[in-house]
Length: 412
Image (cartoon, rainbow, N blue to C red; front, side, top):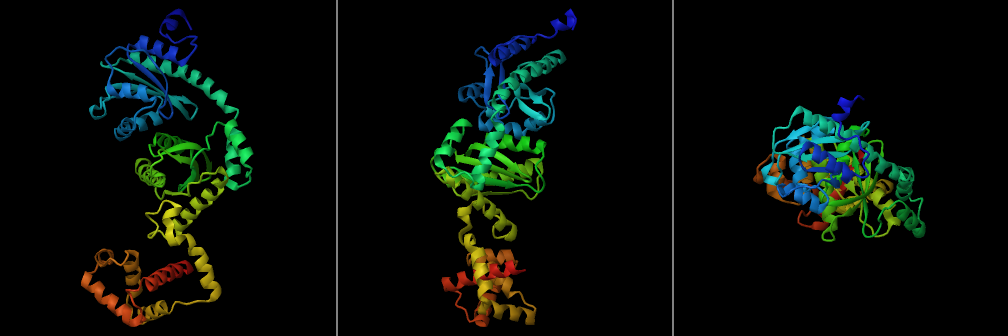
């Protein structure tokens, strides 16, 4: 590099820390700088005067970009641009979250995002200043890689440890605690397994977006994760002590909705096992999450709003009931009568009673689902009672009929 080009590169270093580098970038471009990891946790920030916006102050105080700012950046298409390119992105002010005008650039190593550089600007940034951002990104990359190298040695063993827990091959609590300490994984408190099943094998580009969303979640704390072909497997802990089961459900539901809509991932399914206090039970939580996914496959309508093992209710035992019915050769008399009547009269009374029971015997909701008038449904229910000799006011009879309806679906 000749002398003139050296003068255009103010980031030759050497820099002893990311903080020193953040100050150098700030001095060169003339604006406050923040350096973040891939999950928007602050690694370093430059000094600044009093003229900074609320979003920067909140980020520095929390050591992480606030959730409302992250969501707003998603909605405005900023983060997708940063994921898809290593070029600087100019971001107009977003007043509702206290974010002033920004310039940002993502820092890459091959196909992996290591983090971001953010600058708060108040002027129309020049091409020369944008070029400084590009140069800064290369120097920040080297600094970040040195941080990652120190972590790299334990990564493979870390994944093996997680798989030993998932498969139940590691049951000694003392050894689990020792390995948890070695890999800096906190197993204290209630933890559980969440599994997301994608329609295809998870590619690296998709994994980047997914990992970003998980780390930004305010519902759960991610302890560790791994992939198994088209499944993403997470070991998580609720973010707060209050309502832990609700937090897990909300995380799974929102993840499925957000990733499906933002990234155009069809048929994405999510499920969570029970939260357990002992890491020895991680295997049980994993098996439960997989079982929820199998129920969602087989009962798409009934289980569409189910995301956790605890929500399965009677579906927790449907396989055992199915096996018993088949083994005993049992046939539900009431169902047999209805199926025979439908075949003979080309009617749909079986569908009617199924929908009625699905909607917890709510005539108005069931009639809407069947696209018939409530009076029509009441007439059909009266006819079903006459044909089957069933008392549709008896909860025991209704529950048995509902279970046998589901078992009949499993036979097809």
